[in-house]
Length: 321
Length: 179
Figure 1 (tube, each protein chain N blue to C red):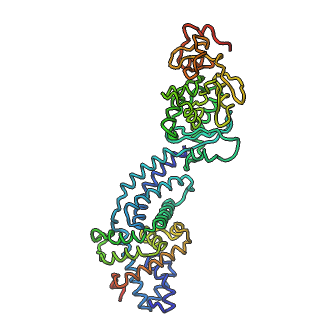
Figure 2: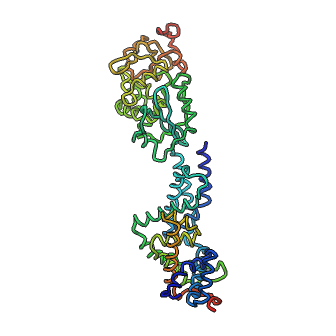
């Protein structure tokens, strides 16, 4: 090939194609005709063929460090971690408004009340994680059970939970103690603090419950202020707390911007005891709520495994309905 | 339960392509540890995007695209390409001469070839490696490099010319073609 000659320059791309074995028939013909008369290009074609041969050899030659075992094993472990974190979520209408349920491979990871419309808030998106995908199939069964629960047809949500969105070990302990509150029971923030052995940590308990990633499922609505006031829920939506408690048989009365549990209308037991009483039994009414667990109905107390007190006999002298 | 199926299918994708993608990344980074990291990253990204991939897509070419982008970011961010090649020129000498297809490649020529490929400018080198070492179609190479099929072909041809020039005088010519 003479670099100066325009014919040689023009044939070069075809020549490279022929050497690589990827030329179309027409190009191959052009090259054949050209190299029949041009010795330099004939030699160059041979050079390129030789080069292709070298590359062919190189392609098939073993590579140094060509051991994917370690990378493959690390990939498997990272993929499995990613999968277990990956949240599939659904957004549904419910008796309490629009609700998001998210689940991972491990279990239900997130329940959030959403505003009536609009996009997901940054907070919810952060909780979901960047890889979350909408997955109505994976959450439909949960939705149906949740609606049954909210409409009083079901008293338990026996869902496997993914608790990796806990902010701290403290929050985990608070939520575990809260999860142990029976259906239809209430206690106070101080009561939860006492249950986890941190009786002075009332405000931290309230904070931990405020950031409960799984409201309803972990029943933070069963935790109220020491005065009996509901005090707060889902931002400023204390009416949701009142409705959840009403479904469970806990009666409340309206108070200023809030609702209040009337202790005189609640079956009462000292936390840790096995028997429930009417509130006037012994000196129960004078005890702080932090030491007590209250039930709206006898049925709820008995469903939770407690027996009527043998002194005040709530079974014989029930509270007025 | 579509998700479960998608995940099983992804296991098959890893099984079918991980070794080759790592080999490609090893060729472009010349470092086993970089190839390990980038191949993992390639498949983690692929996993995230997999369910959005239209059915019938060319998964292999798609993985090469992800790996190519990661490789380019890697060089861009680290500015380490030159250093990698300085090291690679020492490291990449084959342990033993290759005799796989019956003819022994002169070690020096092979060394020169590897060095010549290493010295190619970014896109030409990637296009060249994808074409000559992994036999991708030009359209697939174009998709990986965000350019047209024709540009991809031009990159490979430019690379070929440069490699051929740097091997001047070291090509084992076939005697019959000289006649």
